[in-house]
Image (spheres, rainbow, N blue to C red):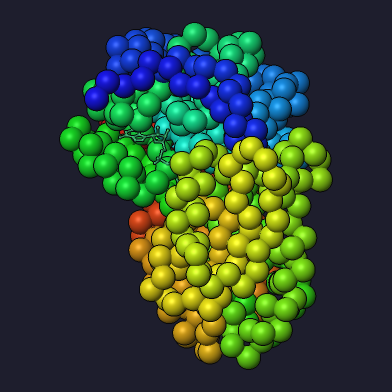
Length: 457
Ligand code: NAD
């Protein structure tokens, strides 16, 4: 099959063509890697303060273009404008946070008889950052910012469907003064540009965010030449509501734990586990909250949920809600063009239903009852993945027991927040390998070198 040389970018809210973007060939991807390799020694040799200043300048450039970036994302991904602004702001903040890292990228001095042992955190070389379409701006910076701070050069491959903000961020990096070849954005398909980055001998590491199935292939391919890899993959996270929780708050928040970004969120709490003794009351409380999710025109600042990314994805999501599915609640969608799917709550639903077992990546949540704390933890842990989740209870001991019991990388108690750029983020089981963000993120983009110096020289 011949690969396309360009892709039409479609506005998911209107089904209109926004623009056409050229897709990189394998040769063009190789050329980007060659430029990155050539630029890397000088970039890592820059005094840490200079690298820091350039990353701060990049963050400032994003800040100046915040509205422009947000508007591009509304057009390209259909994200509500308020959310898109927050995403651009997060990209800025991630860069600003990691601008503090070059000057703190220190090693250790370890007591050693006969001399001194010191460690150096050395850059890896060229890092390939492969990004999905659901949060194009933040995820690009989660990989690129710490990689650059550590002295690596970076080649980013955005998702086919969402190249626009990535390309613009690449331009803004240059405008901020990052030298040629330090951060490049190569729009391309996974099969061509993505595969080439993964298999290129001069790429030292792949930071991949995407589906578990592609992540497995990438990990296998990276094993060929022992390329380093960080994988941020899918999830099927549980939102666990105990009878002793503040039910009003838990019910008001539950829809946003799964319908944010139209459910196209790796952390979506798409399984809602509710203690049986309060099941009916909770469902009653949640009904107005589901109906109240503002779905519609992404340009409206009050909109909370936009369309799905593509027609094909909408069809996939819809396949989990066939005719006769146990729809307990359903929100609204606008009429007319665009890839809309309403917020949908399924109950009662069999634990074996694909809506309970699969990552739908759309605004669909399955509600399951449980009786005891042990049962809640057991159900939460039935999946192969473990990325995120929430626990609603007023009992602090239970909150901690269940947090320790649920196999996931990021949990929230009485909240649905998961990602803060200054705390570590990542999954267990098949949700991935490694952690991004937070104070230790540079570890994933450096190698520790130990040097022993004898004291009798
Ligand atoms: P995807 O796996 O289809 O694609 C992700 C990226 O990989 C794209 O850029 C794609 O072009 C590229 N790609 C595809 N095949 C490739 C190959 N053979 N070699 C190299 N690159 C290849 O995922 P998607 O549909 O874009 O994103 C949705 C998925 O991402 C969901 O499963 C979601 O849970 C996951 N995700 C995880 C996190 C996290 O941090 N854990 C965050 C966001 C999204």
